[in-house]
Length: 240
Image (cartoon, rainbow, N blue to C red):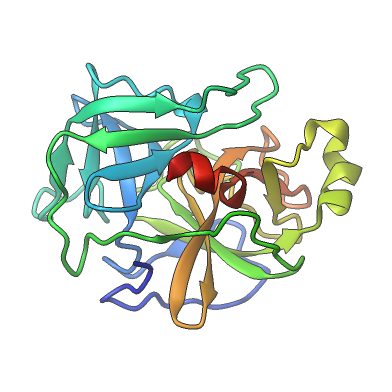
């Protein structure tokens, strides 16, 4: 897990507001959650050939939604994508839609993903992983390019942003921040473009590890306010 066959290209500049186009295929665990008519509404991450992790607030419905693997350019009809139906969506039993706490859902694909250079799983953070603040992370998604238009991005976007400590994050968000949340950004780059349910990863050696799930943030995507992610290490035992 966590080692893309196609290497991502990253500029670690804290000035990226709208993100940048990813290298096609370089985030092979990124999935697109779509309606059956092909409208993208959330992201997710492939964690093995049968399971995808996403945010509970995406409200994935197995009857009307599908998981699309191996996508990069949403306008292209020539990509070899895999469209999968889902047998079951398992939302965390303590999901709190009002406070957006425990914002995590697992999706079981009805048939296994065909793994290859463009479709491969990400590694999961171990339970209770301690992460330093200012650790550089990357979030990816097709979300709306920050703040301006409501249109979604056509090509997969990536943004590099630093982790923010719990105490620093609480200066912005107060007691909305719980131990099952992780904050990143707020230094002139934002993951507002990174879609809900999508990944927040960091590179450990040459392996990318999933530490966060895009959860919530500032509605107008303020680049000075940290965005909030579900803290994957807190849920590792539940996921397993």
